[in-house]
Structures are given as C-alpha cells and as structure tokens.
Length: 124
Image (tube, rainbow, N blue to C red; front, side, top):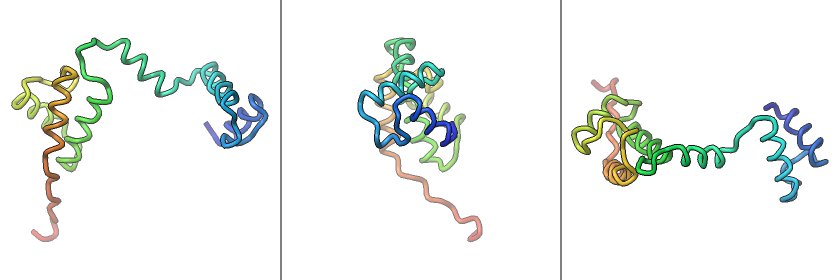
C-alpha cells in the first residue's frame, strides 16, 4: 500500500494522518478496515495456520527457524543438504515432517553448529 493511500485510509477511518496519533480505539478501527479490505494480520494468519496444522507437527516458526539456521551455517540456501542431514541425523525426510519435539531438537543441534568460514576464492 502506498504511503499516500495509507494516510488517506487513516484520515478517513480515524481522522488522523499518522499512526503515532492513533488511540487504541483508532487502531482497532484501522485494523477492522484493513480486514474489510482483505488484509490478514500476521498474528491472525499464524493463529489460522496453528488451527489447521496437526497438533503434533512443528510450527511454521520452528520450520522457518530450522531452514534459516541451516542456510546461515551453510552460507547459502541448501534445501537438499538440509534434507539429507535431517534424514541421516534425525530420521525425518523433510522439515515439514518434523514433530514439534523433533523440531526443538533439530534447532538445538543447528544452534550448536559453528558458522562455516567463508573461503576467499581470490586467495586460491
């Protein structure tokens, strides 16, 4: 949403042109207007995902954390490497199949990894 459109929405709904001037009631009105326009807050989206996923599965936040930690350790995006590592060390074939408990263990393992040193290709 463009800044001018956002400020026009604030003005139309609450009578102010800056979010810093919103009251709690004004904020609620703005959020209701966003919902009416089809926007979904990330908190609401996460709650909806939580309701639709199986109770035993890892949360979207856990799955994202696993991928981010792996990519950070590798230094690049490597989904195949992560899949192979998960299968070999944790007995699951993909992040999406991790239970919540397994995800906690995987995250703990990945957090103990040391970041790989960057190789200076010019020095070779």
